[in-house]
Every structure is written in C-alpha cells, then in structure tokens.
Length: 393
Image (spheres, one colour):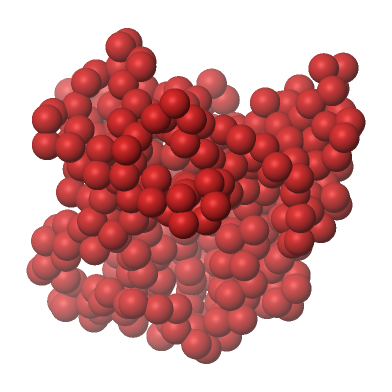
C-alpha cells in the first residue's frame, strides 16, 4: 500500500493519529486507482483527498481555520469583512428573503453578518447554511447555537439546494476547493493529468484528454509557451454548481468571493504552471500528494467560466470587482473610522485587518467579488459603484 508522503521536512510533522488517518486515506485512494485500471483523474483524487467520508480534509476532525489550523479566511480576521459585506447583502436582500451561505467554515461569517443585517434593519427571514462537511456543520451549530430569535430569524442547516430560493446566496472561499481537472496543453494535443501509484507513492501521470474535458479545454484561450507545455486547471464542477444555483434562484442575488481571475488572466502565458496550491499549517506549497487528508488543496477561480455558466441559467452579472474595491465601495473605511485611533489596543487589530483585506500585496487584488442575479438592482449594486470590471469577464 502507498505511504503518506513526508518528503518536505521544512513543514511541521503531524501527530501520530493524524499520520495514521492520512495513511488510511492513501490506502483508500490506492484502492480507487486499482479499481479504475491504475489511473484516476486529478479531479477524482482531489475529491477523495478533500471529501472522502471520515478521512478527507473537510470530512475529518482536524482544525482547518484560524491560528491553530492551516489557513485564515477573511471572516476569521475580525468583524470588518462581514460587517462591510452586510451592506451589500442588505441592498440585494428581498423583503422577507433568506440568506443562504455555502460552506460556512467556522461560522464566523454567519455570526457577524447576521447580527449586522439585524443592526441595519434588514434581518433575513432565515439564515440558511449548506455545509457538506458534517464535522464543520457540528462546529457551526455549536457556535451559533443561541441563534438570533430576538432579531426575528434563526439559523438552519440544509442538506440540499432549495428550489425557488428567494434571497441572497453567499459563497466565500468555496469555489477554489471544488475538485478540478488538471490539464497540459502540448504540441501533441491536450493531456489530462491524473494520479497513479508509482514506487509505492502517489504520482502524476498524463493521458490524452477526452469527452467533456477535451471539449471544454479545446475552447480555452491557450498559447503554448516556448517550452511547449502549458499546465492549468479546468473546473467543470464549479460550472455545474453555478448552473444549479441559477436554476434554484427565484428572486435575489448570488455573491461569490474568492481568489482568481478572468479567463484571459487565468490562462495567460505567464501562468503556464497552473494555479494549484496546497495549505498546511499556514504554509503554502505545490505538492497535492503531501499528507492527503491533512492539507487543503485549491485552485484559483476562473470567474469568466462562472459568469458564462450563470448566463446559461438566465442570470446577469451585477458586478465584478477586486475585493479591495468592493469593500471600499461598501464602506469599510467608514466602519474603520468608527474606531478611535488613540485607543491603540482596540484600533491596531482593526487597522491590521483592514490592511490584510485591502492591500494589493495581501487579499485586496487577488480576491475578487462576483455578483449575479436575474436583473440589475435599479440603483446599481453598491459594491460595484466604482471599479466594476464586468466587461473583462
């Protein structure tokens, strides 16, 4: 059986029980590879590594978010992100509509966003959470157990996407973790990168792309670099998810916050090694076979592909902007100004949070916000009043 990969000594080593769980997942993946004739697509590998019942990264019991986990999302930094986002949600939320959050993580965004919507006088009828990870859902329930009955709404967890949804759907750092296909464009054609067992270890292996993967890859704007090989990712799952959301949305809007680019930027010649990235104990690296089940595996988001999939379901792009521009438009600087700079212990953490969210060297430029709906808000979506890049999609 393959062994868990430990060949990066510069990264912290896991505890014995965690290593045992990773080894068990390696064996589960090896069985899948054997069953499928010795090769599985990277998309299938990523699905198993992240979501295999009881063993995958999001299905296991390890801490994912915050200082004790592997990465920090915007809502974990403090309250500024959620309070600012609430201003856009309030504008787009139909009277009596619900908020539906996908992949709510620790529950930090739900907790602060719901409270801020109530403070703004726009509480949702219900705050719904669709969380595929049973372990994370349990943590969310513990954090949000009290609910907000005094504000007129309550938290509810769903097992499936509701039909005829009326309200605002939210996906913060969700799409980047959806299983994607890994591809290589070469002079001899388009290859799909998959996973095999080689010398008792997980390893890459290419084969000729076919079917839906080949059809979608053939339509991408790829120019081969001088080396003759261009590697990147194709997220068919994200496109299907987007079409499903469009089919389920009756009235309201969808807000997606994640790191990524338009197609022209995503498949630019300077990005010929792709965007796959792994996160382990707050270290980022590029080896998806390191300790399967103990690290997050992500790929940047192709926002053009999401917009195209949404259009197939009859949705319009309400706006597309960098996270920094979106948050500034929604009033993050005004919220920060409410803190007293002379009170350094209280002000400094908020200032640091704002810097992380807005700086081009941090999350400000790499992260984007995409808003979708059946029609434009009559007065225009607040977060895209300036700096809307929808035309670049």
